[in-house]
Image (cartoon, rainbow, N blue to C red; front, side, top):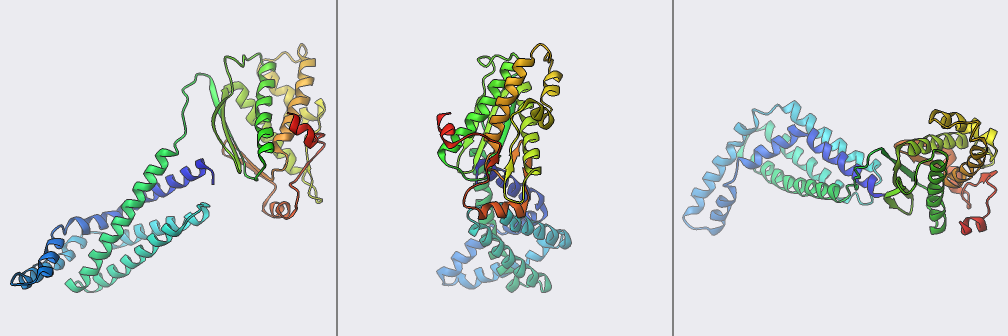
Length: 348
């Protein structure tokens, strides 16, 4: 899993802690009300004349648990506990690599809940002791887990740039790829940015494309650049993905964007979007024609072999069943009309 996904999952779990306030209030009340229990146990363990006195004091201490918990709304407590349990179970959908700790926490919560249910059915020192024992153990586990999540989240926090008139583009391509293809797709992002800067007379030296985060395996790239250029890139990539996935064929082919100006205008509304940015279409007609073909080519390269893509939280995909079909094919989905060979990829 990529770091931004892990960070998001950590945030979801931390939110679950906040939402389960009533559950944790009960745990804290039980634990904070019995600081002397350990001393009683030590005295009992030492034996001698003080053993009976310490045992009686401990029993009296346990009997007071009823006074502690009776002011807490039982329905709200169980609702809060069940909500936290549900949040933990939802982590199975988070694609975390190791769920063993989550399973262990869930089992400890179940154990505590069972002991507590027995206690409230018969308020006795004998039933109070297991509740306190399980509450302490559970609190220790949960506090450690929360501390780990907070540390995890802070260490995965992204770098922030305070740049005027700049915007971020986040692109996730979940299909695994070789180092060469990874480099080719990164280059495609850079080529599209440079070509649009040329069209809009934006200085690349003054507004370079800055790498905020890049991770491989699955490809996740977050870059920052001129807000007008990045906005156009986001629109063009979204439009390209929509077109390509709509034109998926039964033979397992993805139809790329035809590298002709008219086709590019149809798919991307290329000319009209440039015009909205103040470009004189008639004066820059030749430049636009050349750039349209180049950008279409780079968009095809970027989306080649991908059954799913996420651009700034907007996801496009062929669909669950189609993705299964693509995974069953030895070769990844190739774009028709791409017109680029592996040798050409290597030369880029």
